[in-house]
Length: 614
Image 1 (tube, one colour):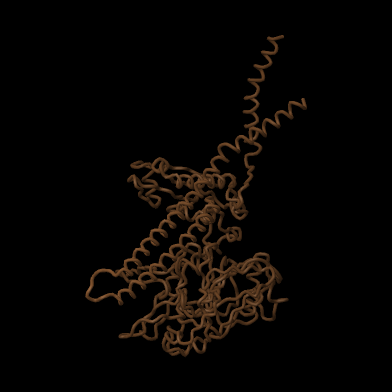
Image 2: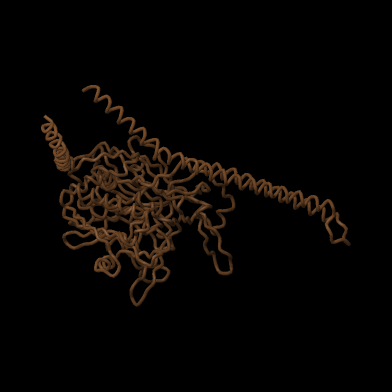
């Protein structure tokens, strides 16, 4: 009997681990792709747009992930972020169904892998130990085309998914994106009436032409090439309903559109000084479409901003003045949650207009760039008559409102036409509605011109471009975002893994407020005492260098009060540290002692219930 019980126990002892291994193997096979993300912002989950792109890759892409694992052994925060990047890339591979390969490399010093990282164009960052840290990604498609993220900066973690997905999407495409460009301005180069010579193409146009297949669209817009993946309009002239209908249907059928248009195209006027003002001033050739898309745009006013106004030279022998119509919009005016503007610092505009949201149902109006609160609109006629930029300062009265200079429109939209108008040269069926509106509007055209963002020098026949503002990066970001699929467009910034200690922050803010209040009290008493000493100084005997009894008493009183307040300041700091330390101690007790005890008691309770049921 005892032998039987013993054999039974041995069988259980052997069967338990075997059953566990079999169950683990089955779970790995059946539930291999199963994921449960319980974080508040779903930081461990890929967006639906990324999943759609990964399941529809046109060709295989291989990714090499470089991270200096051994050299970064003391950089805990960086290693933690690197692990999250690795897990994210493994998730990409899992969803790509064999079309995405991942290779992880540790570029150790003086190794072939380090040479490979340097050859790939990755950025080497030196650390205190004297070693270099590599932390980047190189991706390559079947045809040998490559793309590189030189260094994965932890402070850009919220845009990591977009950057990786965008890189994979570009490399998986087998054709070069086609862009249509319609512009009344001499973006391809022209003739300078003042100098009497040819002008080179704009840097923006040259860069776009190098990266994409840019096709010039006739100003009449009597047809739209079906191969266009993106259409860019720059200060279009008046268009008939037949052309507006083609543009409307292009957008309704999923076409992507970027519009640059402002009340006063200074670049156009500079190329033809005999023209007193832009012949498109005061006109909005796209007003019918704008109204349907929920955008109000008044071409009869120019935006002036005293906070973002740039300083310009007004002539020899005269001091520079601030030009309120020449704006250098900085970080506070750039949307940090949009891919197109999140990583930029300064975008320059000239004689720009403003965009207003009429809150059309179904359409989402996302501002990309906006003015400061120290801004107002100026009548275009008055602006054209201005001889000196300082004239804008004379009666400048900021409204206290912020105005939008660039916006992205998305969502559901209806056609501006009930049916095809007469004269429209198209045989396609009328599309009355779209679920995916893809339109960006920038209320300025001078933002594209070289003079506002780049310095171009001629070096032995070659044009050397040196940007001094982010205008070019802004335009490229807009273009790249719209040259992807609708899935890529809809990828927004991700939540951050690093979560702030909100309770600790509240304690610090309260203590700092008390600290500042006491500091102000000390400063006020110091000023009062100095004033009292000055009054006593006027009353003292000129022949005596010693302090009077009144001065000695006042000085002693001040010293005592100063010591008292300094002690109060120290007490505030000690209280701050004490509160934080107490909070930390309670958290340690909760995590180390209380929670394990509670879990143990819970398991004992469940075990007792199971035993009683048996």
